[in-house]
Image 1 (cartoon, chains in turn purple, brown):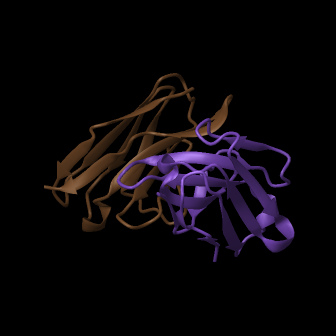
Image 2 (cartoon, helix red, strand yellow):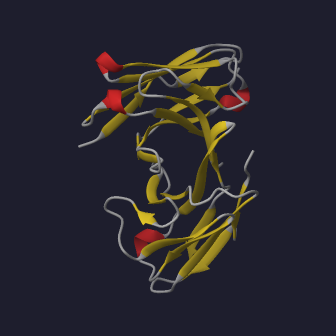
Length: 119
Length: 109
């Protein structure tokens, strides 16, 4: 069974840092691109970042570029999101999602981890 | 950057009725459009990809159509568990990113 489980969320002050993790199981992690998507309280979905299977290609939403860094460890079936210079508007549930293939977008999602940025 | 606009914002229907949700792209996305369902407190679930292909395990009452800039998600006969928020989504090659529509809330009338 395909599973992705996020962790690392919590309360942080503006300007602070947090590192999110996503543990994957049930599939060949090293063969798939992975993504982070977030959802602010009561709002819609916002794509944050993606990373290719071998880490050669990374992309970011303009809203997080220069502050967030996506990475992965294929040996440990893990995905990460390092978030620096956090802002109040970064408050959201952060989801880890697998990219299914060329025409199959985000086919498996974790349950999310809540990041709250507040003083 | 492609903008996706969903309509209506809220759709009020009864179980057994047919639901038609719309998603319009600001420029052609060919057939690279997907639909997701999200229930309160849950992660989104992929329903449709490449405009008209049902994802694994999705019931046949869900269907997608369209190409270019206009897309439709149809639920042929609503079940109680179908009342949720629905998002359309596309991926662009440049700039490389995913874009979501703002969502349509399907509520019980």
